[in-house]
Length: 153
Image (cartoon, rainbow, N blue to C red):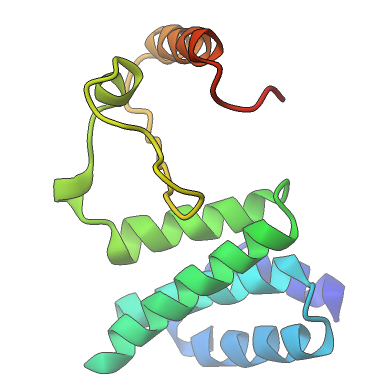
């Protein structure tokens, strides 16, 4: 079952398969409450359902459950890329308020605070030239080291 669910987690299910995917991921989580990949897969399926099939209050409920599942996936397996992908997908598709989005230079330059708690999420979307991204990342690391913040990987 894990292999089949892993294969399903690699794609967003079409609308007609969303309910089936949600049921399968829910069963996998019932069988193994520490199955991080199932949480990320269910999060993606719930986000898809909220955006394409849900109506009324079910839209918000599905996004909230998707956020909870994505966070649980990351908590269970911080190195699992699918958990981070599910979280970013949910925020971009469901709950991201573009009025709350700020430029990276505003945070790195100290104009705006960074994360204020462990619940805060930073989403970075690169739209520039790769050399600019590398320069920005190098400056971010330099400032973080100077300030004594962040975690060395």
